[in-house]
Length: 131
Image (cartoon, rainbow, N blue to C red; front, side, top):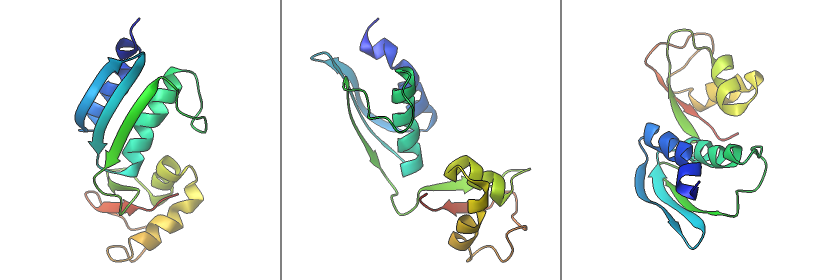
């Protein structure tokens, strides 16, 4: 199996995130992967996918056979989340920050549009601060 085939799921993820791809090819026994995503959260998702393909956890170093440069278009926030039906700040915090109790961080980052952490509305775009 070629490296390109092995890491195709990472490319598929990048495409689903609307990444602007510059390179995805094999060179000298390494996979070259260059592109731009919207936020640091999306960059982390792609790196985590590279690692999971090799059975590594999120905290592990990237596989040595990957030479990637994934730039971020908007580094002013960790991510932006559009509220959907059923969302709560706790649920959003658990998803992005791995801890539902961190809903307070999201609330504070969005005080300009939120006056109550229990009153979010479908369609609002919330800033997700860095973990």
